[in-house]
Image (cartoon, rainbow, N blue to C red; front, top):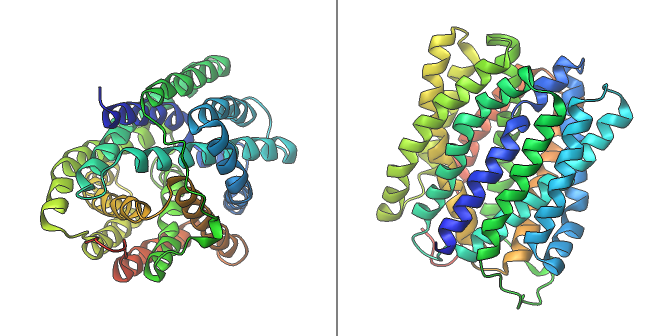
Length: 368
């Protein structure tokens, strides 16, 4: 099995483990009595901690290898979910949940970006990025619904055992990937991204926040159970898998990133999602979103990794994650203290898809 296939197996297994609970976190907090502003404050705290630990965890991963860093972080995710699911909601428990979740999530994404840069080619990489997204989506399709069934039918200790076990098993394929230990001595503050790419990465974080909150919108305004959220993800995932398989190849062939087009389509789909309450039509919109949103995601990730090939992988991953997380902090601050209505947050995020599409992305010399 080559390195790309090993990496995709890691993507599949790790997404299985993380999605069981992660896609329901805002809904779980809401059901425990946290209001919308409180959930936004949790998101703010989560991104703030993630930003603060980003550089130290990147350096730890660099020293002990990211394989071992992810294994250690698997224990953090178990602790995190225990405080979320098993204990009552109070300030201390919420902080411990947020801290452990932020550490685990940051290590996971630093590692995922780093290993992607290790194994992806420098040119014509949209097809390989598409395969990564397909493996993520193939994991999300069953597990988002299975997660709902598990929370409704299993004791918490069994849920935690399953998640931690999957997290640890998911790391095994990474040991078959050769990790370059001859890191370039490059200071983080020496990395300069193209200005257009910086603006794009900042504005694109509105989309990430809205994706995190949309399950809560479904729960409050469309159908208040976990199973329907899982069903929505299944329909969107099926459409995504089919679309990405064919679209990514076309992106390499045509040498276009389609960000402007996908920004427009994404905006239109988000507006539909926010104004339809009939469950059958909502599921149809989920199918359409699977097409439009994944066009955007393939283009975004293809550009991120194409730009990353101009730098040392560790430094790029740390700086890129840091930029995105501080952007999420600033955006969420605005939502917490100025505009905490859930629909308004999602409408603004929808509009920002248009903005990012218009800004575009500069992936450096030799890009599209």
